[in-house]
Length: 362
Image (cartoon, rainbow, N blue to C red; front, side, top):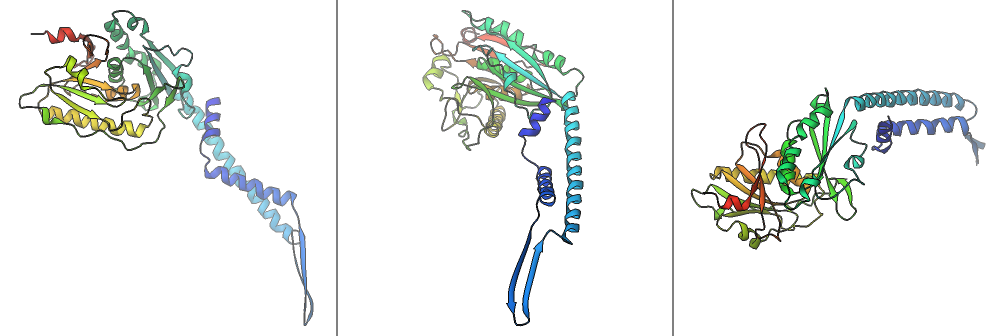
């Protein structure tokens, strides 16, 4: 009930509130304000006088206006009460599933659930997935983290109960390695409304994507490096920072590299949902273009915010080319030492892939 009241208080004022305010003003004038004024001037016929005021016959007009204001006010109040009850029932019926992924930074003091604004109507259901213990060791146990993440769909279903998909909103965010974020996004791609939040680095807090679209888009895909018969390609997607050629050469010496990159890459600077959706559309068109060129396997190097990594993963279809998403570790002998091979079949689990083993495959 408190959430509904807060939502009503913070929402944009609608005409019904303006009408109610006008009714109150009219009642105040009729009940508490009276005046009489007169003007006299000399004419050839004598002295003329004009009287204006609320006394005398004007009182009848005041009564009519006052009762009309009362009736209109009651009607508007009834509309608001009806909508309040309707939204209260919707809040009990709807669910907001908060999927928070913890893997790199401990956000215990500022959980994602507490950052969801009141405009998301519905009962809050927390779905915390913490894989930090698997990823902080040397070497990290990535496959164990993958197994834990693969339980996300079942956890979401349990929290939805018998609520229909149309009444479910999944709010997701995480601080996690990019390959695992991509996989988590794939696990969230089944139905329901989805909203992705991100971690604001300077303020150390969660925020929704409510920024302004600056119309900055990916540059054209450079498919000129592909020759006839090429079946594997490295797709380097630069959003947060520009992926360096030296790092790619270090790991993918002979595999052709195609790029999607923003002209103005910057960290902590992608807070527009509209821009993310536009970049996702460009990404999917690039995948389609590569598929049409006969590409069967994509080595994806993605330098992007967590929210965009989740969004791209949620849109990646299993009918698209096989994709391996790589982790960037510049201090390692191979700058991209491992990847996660995304599942190709329904119900299958992603797999950890060591780049060293992949390179030495026959």
